[in-house]
Amino acid sequence: MAKKNPNHIHLKVKDHSISGEEFELIENLEYGFLETIPQPSSDKLPEYYQSEDYISHTDSKRNLFEKVYHIVRSMSLKKKLNLINSFTSEEKNLLDVGCGTGDFLETAQQNKWVVSGIEPNEKARAIANKKTNHSVFETEHLLNFESNSFDVITLWHVLEHVPNLEHHITIFKKLLKPKGTLIIAVPNYQSYDAKHYKEYWAAYDVPRHLWHFNQDSISKLVSKQSFRVQKVKPMWFDSFYVSMLSEKYKSGKMNPIKGIWMGLLSNLKALSSKEASSLIYIIKNS
Image (tube, rainbow, N blue to C red):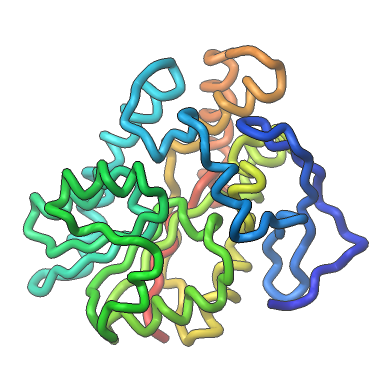
C-alpha cells in the first residue's frame, strides 16, 4: 500500500454508532481513496461490530431505520439478481463476499445459481447458512476455493471493510473465471450527500469502513490486477437511508422528512454529476 500524505487530513470523523471514538480520514496518494486512521488491529476490529444495532448482521426490524433498511433490501434483491443474470446464461456459480445474513445468496439460489458465501460474523453466518443449505464460510475459506471457480463475485458494501485491499483483489482475480464478472458496490465520498453532511455522513462509518472510495480510486485499485471498470451504476435507494441516518448523527434526533429530502436532492444532483451516494462497479478482465 502506498504511503499516505500526513499533511492532508480530509476530515476528522466520529464513530457515531458504537464507540464514540474519533478517527482521521487521510488521502492515499497512490490510489486517491481515503484511509481511516488509526485502523484498529485485526484483534480489536471485531469489537466495533459488536452491537445489535449493526444492521447487516441482524434480521430484526425494531425501529424506523431497520424497517427502512429491510424494505430497501427487499427491493434491491430483485435488481441485484437481474444484474448478475445479465452476465451469464449457462454456468451460474456465484461467490458473495461479506454476505451478511444471506438474503442475496438465498435469492440467487432460488433462481438456479450455485452459491457460496463468505461472512466473518459468526451470528450473521449462522443465519445465512440456514437460508442457503450451509453454503457460507469463514473468511479463511477464501483460500480454499479452486482457481477460476466463479462466474460472478459480488461485494455489496463490503470492500470498504476489507483489510489488505491489494491482497484481496489478487484473490478475487484468481477465483474469477477469465470471462467472469466482479461486482463491487461501495459508498461514494464524492456524492452530494457526502459533501453536504461532511463529518456526519453516515457512510463514513468509521472505523468499520477502513477505506472510502471515489470512482478514480476504484479504477486504479483494480487495474493493478489487469481488471477494468466496464460500467458504473448508481444505487438510488442508498442516499435516502444514508441521509436519514446522517441527520440523526448531525442533530441528535430523527428527522426523516429532511433526510428523505436530502436523499432525493443528492439523487437529482447525481443525474448530471454521475456521483450517486453509492455506486456499483461492473469489473471485467482487461
